[in-house]
Length: 268
Image 1: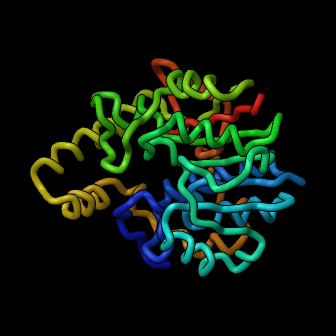
Image 2: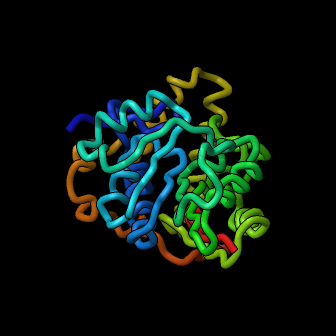
């Protein structure tokens, strides 16, 4: 395997590799979502590489549609996923879904909402295309870890990040029976370390180019620069799961908090 290349944008491009943390966040989110898809019609909003969409299709979904705003992402999805024919890949805008009302039983959207200008419009659209009693499953970075000391997100591709309570409050405007989970539960020591890295990144970005800053951080932070997991996407992903990244009921207090928030809600 080749070493992962620093990701320039948030879209996971398998040609450039994927870091260990990205890989685990990706597969664990979809493994969790697969519990909801048996014999159901599923929409994967912002499907990116399409590996998650294809995985859901393999787990008993009646039909899966993977959509993304990037034409390049969709081209790569068909090229990388040998079973792409099991998924209907479609170009779409998450804030204006090209489907009729009540089209899906499940809508999943991972690492999407933090990129959108119109989060309310996005959630309205997801609710609109869901059938009554359908499930909406989303994941997003926890602001408590990602950028708690800054008004704006540290990640330049994020427009808004959420604390767990904020995400619940937003979802409750459009859905019912909201349950919140976490990925990669961090203790106080690890949480402080992640926050220190983000602060250092902000300082470095003010002094140097983004490329130089990224290359420096990837050398500094070993877990990010682990080998690419491109090849594993074609096999049994359950065999590569890191239990530290498994989705569990959220624990959010002074001493522990998840790196990523995952929420499940129902169309009521």
